[in-house]
Amino acid sequence: MSATVQNPVPTVGRIVLYTLSESDAEAINRRRADRLAYQANPYNDPRIAKKPSGFQVHAGNPANAGDVLPMLIVKTWGKTPESSVNGQVFLDGNDTLWVTSVSAGDGQRRFAWPTRS
Image (spheres, one colour):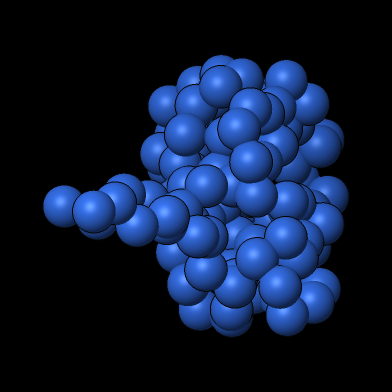
């Protein structure tokens, strides 16, 4: 006897798996390039010197399209398994990526439910 497994309804606080898109990876790597400029010349780089208090140096391993990372759902747009969500993607570094209106499915810029072991 086999049962059909149905995706759950996304809810705030759940952790799902997010697949980075090309534009996600480019944005992450662009932010992290500032860290390299800062390390090369932390006191004379005008982009860094003019940053307000609270400036964060984004450091971490390079991001690539297709990377699958954990995402915490922070907002849901509906109450069905097909509902889109906003979330914070936990990157391999000291920063996160905020993504909006992401739907469940396969491929880039989609989230999937982790398999249970």
